[in-house]
Length: 298
Ligand SMILES: C[S@@+](CC[C@H](N)C(=O)[O-])C[C@H]1O[C@@H](n2cnc3c(N)ncnc32)[C@H](O)[C@@H]1O
Image 1 (cartoon, rainbow, N blue to C red):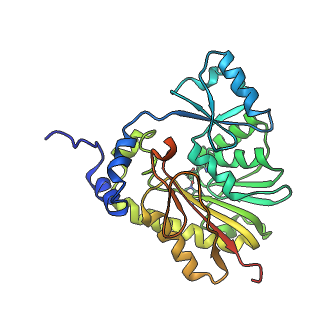
Image 2 (image 1 turned 120 degrees about the vertical axis):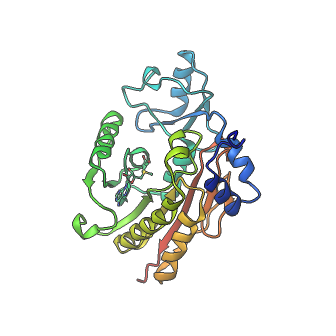
């Protein structure tokens, strides 16, 4: 039989229609379009406007992102290693949906920050570019962790790198609480099909429940590491509620000192808890964010 017009696995088309009935068709259409290439200007290297000028002088069309402070949009994919400033760490490649993480973490100079699922280090590096924080980058996969080190080096940033399991902090935590925690959890990647064709082929419906269990374990295990008054951002590049608001609601039900911090982004939609960017919203990848605050009296 001819493949379905939307070219998505059936189980995913059904899951999208269940979770996002009004948007599912548009989401699948966006998944099938070529995405723009987005860069993140490294604030420690120079002004975004200066980098845009250098890119244009090198013949590369480039625009400042309309609302992300560090974002630059290129119309098409290109070999970024040949763009001016790459070797010197003037920029990194990062979709705008992922760049929103640093806005939401709100890390301030001097804070202790944990990036619990850090490889290849995109969000960790962004946090370090924006504030003088003491950042711990945790990653379970040894091989992927080396990519964090390479990115830190190219961008001339420093972090404490730990290879370890976010769901077992007793194996690596030094007992000092974190002011900020980012959990960019392992997920189905159902929000990034436009960049990751492999996801359509390899992801299985049964993965979703398993990922939900893992995501819950990580979130529950890390909550005690957050300082009273601290802020935790839970993120995935999934569109499925079972990996997103359901996971966060589970923590809220279990932890009396956890409260939701409401926020809006310029694009996307409010979820029952948190915020969902769907693929194509603002021409971004799909991404989910929830922000939690730990009650200071605890
Ligand atoms: C969505 S990716 C992180 C992307 C990264 N934050 C960035 O912006 O570049 C999730 C990462 O979590 C790692 N991971 C999976 N399970 C983990 C666990 N239990 N503890 C720590 N890291 C884990 C994966 O190997 C993967 O590198």
